[in-house]
Length: 142
Image 1 (tube, rainbow, N blue to C red):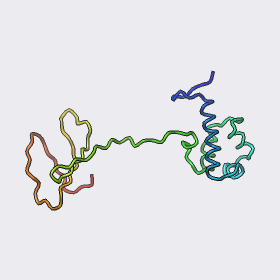
Image 2: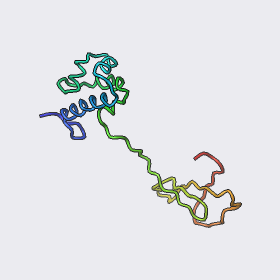
Image 3: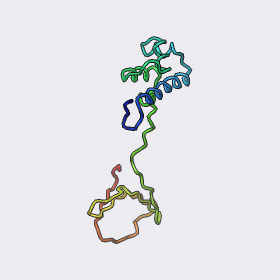
Image 4: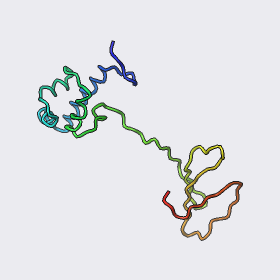
């Protein structure tokens, strides 16, 4: 029985994936076994066995081989690209004024924060009333 990581992949699956990535990254860059092995400080035969899976990769191999290939260790592992975790709300424009919501879920106070851009040709915003508070920042970077 082989051990599995948190994603459910077995060690053998990870080994096979990294071995395949090693070879594909090397060939994509037009490098020979000797080129990468020299840059990684190992014998070409060792690198060949790592690529074919006949020799087990260790954690110590990852940074050395990544540097030799000019990639990040994540690229060797075939990790999925990290998505931007920020959620950006779409700006809304009404009567020439653009509003960007700055908070998705206001706290229990019910207060919402917005970045607002007023058109330069407007001398005065149209007066509006509402029940609540209003904070206006004159010109800070937001």
